[in-house]
Amino acid sequence: MSVPLSHVLIVASLMFAMGLGCVVAWRANVIMMLIGIEIMLNAVMLTFVGGSAHWGIADGQLFSLMLMALTSAEVSLALAMVVYLHRRKNTVNTDQFDSMKG
Amino acid sequence: MEATLFYILAAVLLTGTLLAITARQAVRSIVYLVTSFFALALMFYLLGAPLIAAFEVIIYAGAIMVLFLFVIMMLELESPEKLPQPHFTNWLPALLLAGAVVGSLVVLLCSRLRAVPPGFVEIPVRQFAFALFKQYGVAVEVVSMQLLFALVGALYLGRRR
Image 1 (cartoon, helix red, strand yellow):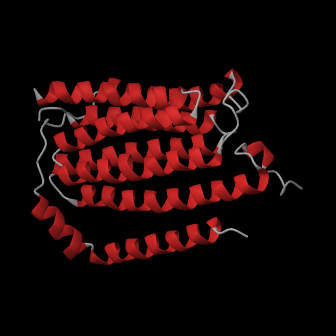
Image 2 (cartoon, each protein chain N blue to C red):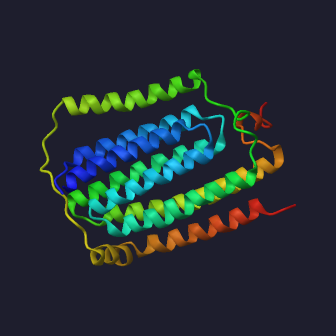
Image 3 (cartoon, rainbow over the protein chains, first blue to last red):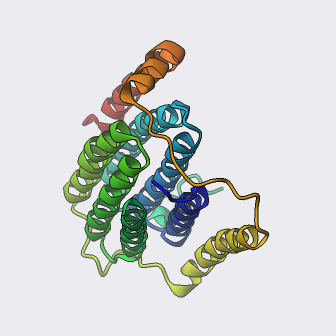
């Protein structure tokens, strides 16, 4: 395939910027913040796979596999936490979770 | 032809992600995100990583996104108009941060970096598996422990009192 590596990196960084914007803009909603984290992690995976294909070393693909395992662990814990918080406060709005405010 | 396909997939990926982060309801956002992850899986295939492409479809689009969808439907969130929508003041810092990333990209592209020759090397599955289980065998064990801890933690958090 005759696409320069820089174009792959541009796509990945635009996707990362979108995920960052999602986390910052939707900071009142826990679920949308988690979705933004997913987008950012996928952008990182694209960077890893692009670098791995460019230099012909399998390590980048391996690391994206590890990243996938890490993400599934993180998402299962975070969604269990969301269910727990929703059971306690009946909302997913982060402004309601202020019981540790001094 | 592969290069054209790559740019089409990049357009689908970025459009899907943009629609996902601006959707009014979380369910729609998940569906847009599944679309963009399918495009991403095809890009992985074009970059010579068929195994990662398959895992992206099976684990990401198939398992993680469905887990999100399951939790959103289980929570019975309030009607979408009562959910807090981001105002313009909320989008402002997000646009600022995204603009910083895009601006640094433009600066990098204008400075004409050392040109690297285009072209990608396909990595056979045999090489991938050899590196995974020979070089990084300890990491595989650590990841399996991590998944076990996540399972126990999710069970602990999700139990009924």
